Image (cartoon, rainbow, N blue to C red; front, side):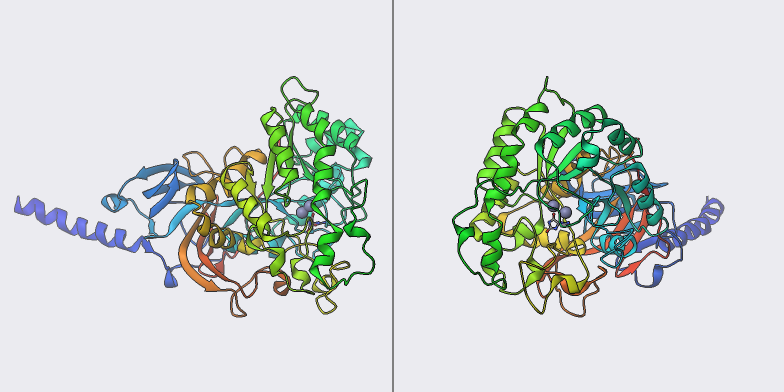
Length: 505
Ligand SMILES: NC(=O)N[C@H]1NC(=O)NC1=O
Ligand SMILES: [Zn+2]
Ligand SMILES: [Zn+2]
């Protein structure tokens, strides 16, 4: 007995020493590093915490990650099975599906000076976003054909820190030409996007309802969505717009120039297209997705009615409509200019209500930066400045900081930012922490507060154009995993950019 024990003990001691060496506790201090795709030198490991958002619940669990996928989830007090190593113990931090941002303008090729794949995906990784879907406009050329999609994919090579898919553009040139549309869809765009008003980009002209209805018929065959910028210049100008000379530095002037009637006019114009998506309709199988809804009144009511009648319609809104109100926008501060505009505080309240009630399905950033000169920050001219909010890195803390007042839950965050967007983008292996799914995960501390001051690391190409600078926020991203690679942790990115381009098959 004694001799036997004597033989076992040293072995146990060796095992214990090995296990201790492979137990990581955040913060990682000096244990991170490497030039490779991951800051963590393991392809098979466990991560655990007291607050894992999985299987419809939040609680203690350990998640096994193997070769980029989630292999198993062990629910319960993981400290009883700590022998499974390597293990990263995140303590009280939240482990959640990585965010999927279905609406980002990365602007490359052609306008990399506005953002670009490298800076954009570094900012995404730092913000807990593990997948982006890039919009077809603001880059040059726009993504409207097989050839231009190829330019996107080529430009993205070796620059991606997170996974990136692409929407194609539905424009007058391809909308009535099914074979052109099919070649774009066959090349791998996840769906199409169109504008019902001028987009601000010359090579991305707007579509009318006929273009949309015809495009949907082709999309129905592919079961991919059409995303619509639903603002349309109303047929009758409102009295307010007719008022004489208005100060272009005043935010009220901008609001009057782009009233909720723009959104309402677009939604009314989509009536037939929405009807066509119903069971038995001309484009059954297709799906209309309204991007960045701002008008929480008539436009939302009409969309709710269409949903109730059986139309396949989903709606997104963006953190800036939930965080800011028109009353707070300082005159001349064009960082807040976007379209549709940020409206009054009552509108913001109604948007939160619609989100909590499930009428708004999901969130996206609509990160749409430009070079600072185009924001005309000195002149402060709202009518001439580039419209677009810079927010990619901050969407998680912004949603959480403002949503806390409304009692939002971690499961709701995961639904709005991961599950529903994965469904929209047709990503069946993303958006949830489930066995067999991609190990796309954000680990964050909801209680950590920070001031977005000059000392805060911002990875967007142009930090000063973000309307969130100076804000006090809570929710700090600790780690971001993309298909098992630890791509960001504690202010550091992985050495190599190993994100994948996602092409639909
Ligand atoms: N072209 C472009 O990015 N436009 C975006 N900017 C904005 O504020 N709303 C948009 O649709
Ligand atoms: Zn838009
Ligand atoms: Zn956009």
